[in-house]
Length: 108
Image (cartoon, rainbow, N blue to C red):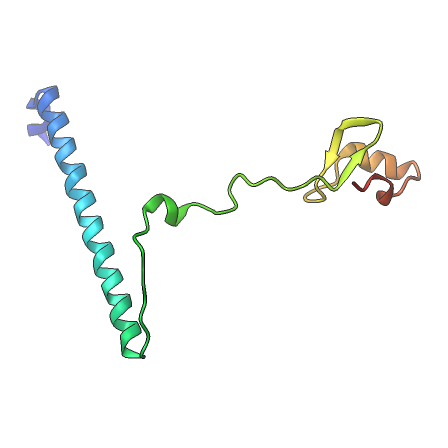
C-alpha cells in the first residue's frame, strides 16, 4: 500500500483504469462461462437455449420501475386530492368517509 502513496496522480489514474478494465474483462468471462454452462445443461435434457447478453443494469433493474399507477379515487372538490387505492388511505378521504360519505363516491 505504501507504493500507492508514491505514485503520481497520472499513474494512479492509469492504475485505476487498468484495474477497472481487468475487472470488466473478468466479469464478462464469468458471464460467458455461466451462459455456456446453462446451454450445456439444457442440451443434456434435449433443449436449446438462446441467451442474449444481459448487462448488469438490466439484470438488476425492475421493468416496472417508474411506471405510474392510475388514480382510482379523486375528490371532486379538490383535484389535488387523489389516491391510487394502494397503501394507506389518505387523510382527506378518511375524513370524508368518517363524515358519512362512501368510497364509491370518489371512484374515477
